[in-house]
Image (tube, rainbow, N blue to C red):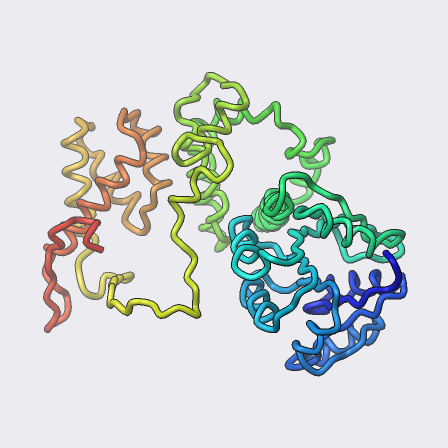
Amino acid sequence: MNGPTNVGVLHPGSMGAAIAAQAARDGAEVLWCAAGRSSATRQRAEAAGLTSVRTLRELCDRSALIISLCPPAHAQELAAQVAAEDFVGTYVECNAIAPDAVAGIHEAHFGGSGFVDGAVVGSPPSRAKTPRLYASGSDESVRQLAALFAGTAVDVRPLAGGVGQASALKLAYSSYQKTSRVLAAVAYALAQDHQVEDELLDIAGLRTTNYLEETSYIPKTAARSWRWGPEMLEAADALSSAGLPPELVEAAAAVMSRWEPDKDSPPELSEALRHLHADGRSEAGSNAEQRSPRVDPAQPQERGVPTALFDLDNTLIDRDQAVRGWASAFARAHGLAPGTERHLAGKLRARATRQSFEQLRHELALDAPAAQLWAEYVDTIATLAARTRGRSPGWNNCEPPGGRSAF
């Protein structure tokens, strides 16, 4: 850079303080706002050699570049606060938020000034660790950021394509990396509960590559998902029995259901990826219009009173009776063998999810898609439950005229 430049950092957490310290190595004065911050944050800032200012206004007035590194939930609010101070420098949005959210921040607050979509991948920088800071946005702003960290332990990697590219890369990687870490903990806990953790680690040691690198295997995964999905549901039952969270493997089973068209026939990679999209498309942003819009807390919202009541322990209605009624009707409708209704009622008595119907579909060799079976169950069980007599005096049940759509 042409001489030292003042840099603001919001806020010096473990990553923010370490990155700010690297920026200070080139002679830049790195500012942070101490107002409302914890003693732990103050200690990190002092250890990193940062200069404290009293207000956000002062930080914005004195900084040519501001780096935002905060919990994702606060990223939009923080950007709005900086914009409200009429900041005219370059704003570097380095938080793990969705590409649409980054684009929204850029358009709403920094469309007329410098803006970088940044993504930090790796551990906080140190003598032994060099994280990558992927950056997309205007060429001038990205060059400014790269110059700031030239010769430091922060490796700035420019990305073509404009705002949104860096955040997309960050979440694509973190969705795999962080979920894998959590899933590894759950898998190890299950193995340990059954005293087979050493064998699990031995199996894991047989792998020499990273699953994320094996894109050629994705079509095979698609073709085998009709068998793997029920296996995941069995794993969910095992986890639940051990008191462990089953949601990750249940989610995996739900994802696998999108590959139903690829049963035993590995598709081309592009086709397998297309089937993963909710509407069968793979173009970036194709589902953006289907998402619920983000709520702007600064705007007045309509105040309705939508209400859902959940009877989780059969206090108000006889849910068991409703499940038995559904099972009898289901068995008749699908021509199932006598006695199957008892099996169905027992299987779904405690809990029913869409994944339950993935398993039932394969177990009973039903032709109807699992999504259809699940939708029919929800419609039917809502009506049957509403028809049962209330268990407690003073409670009246009503049948929803619109089935599940009424809830």
